[in-house]
Image 1 (cartoon, rainbow, N blue to C red):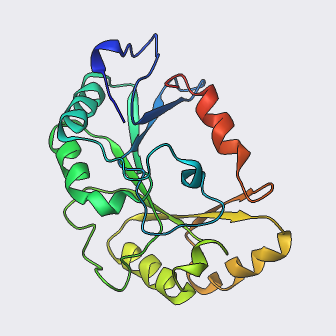
Image 2: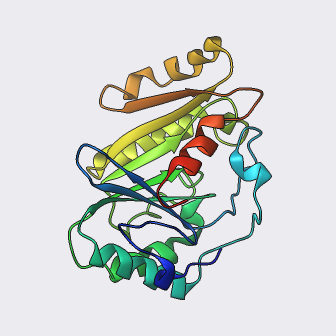
Length: 212
């Protein structure tokens, strides 16, 4: 991934690099997604990263600092979402970005939750307001429902908002959500239907993004 801040205009918005900006036309605010890495320790069949250009790509320290400066300089960016790949594989990059942002930002992170039992303190060094957990039949090949429940409890105890990103091909797969019912009263669930094992909505969202 290559990031060139000089070619970036926050109002002209022609992007270069590991970022996606989605503008809310009502509030005029940006949800800024930072693709920390395309690398992932899962290999889910439906994932857009299966078709990725470089599954080992990670933002450099220079890119991280330039992204942070861009966010710092543009108060319309209210939400920053760390995503991937699996962003928690490179917590140091997230820490570096946050270190260079001195104003209040709503931070969220999308994860497969691999660290739930192995390293429950993994997220402690970074600031997070919300964590979105990817959970569906694809991810259940690599993680158990009980591990996801453990992660939900862990995040709740830390006062972090929780979301579940659920992808399904067949509505009968909603049964997997039922398995989480004991811990999802305060959890926002977003369900997206995959077509032919992929999620075309993601590609469309990227192409419509002012940062694309």
